[in-house]
Image (cartoon, rainbow, N blue to C red; front, side, top):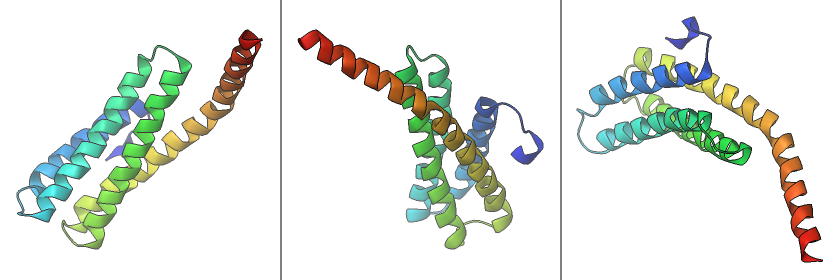
Length: 137
C-alpha cells in the first residue's frame, strides 16, 4: 500500500481514495448497517482527496486553508469508520489495517500542513481586521 510510496500528498490521497472505493465495494455487498458504513467511509475518503485537489486551484490563501481543513476533517472521519470496521470485525483485519495505517499517515501529513498554515492565516485575519477598523474611522 502507500507505505511504499512516500511521495506527493495529493497522489497518496488519490490512491487512498481508490483503495477505499474498492474496499467499500466489497464491504457494501453486506446488508444493512455494514453497507451504510461502507458508503460513509467511501464518501469521506473521496471527499478528502477531492478537497486536496480543489485546494491546488484555490483563489486565495484563505480558500486554500479552508479546503485543506475540510480534507483533514474528512480524513479523520475516514479513520473513524475504519476503526469501527476493525473493532466490529466487519472485514478481515488484513484488509482494514493497511487502510488504517495509510489514513493515520495522511492525517498526520494534513495536520502538519495545517499547523504551518495557521500562523500565516492569523496574520492575514489581523491585517483584515485592522483594515476594517481603520476604514470605519
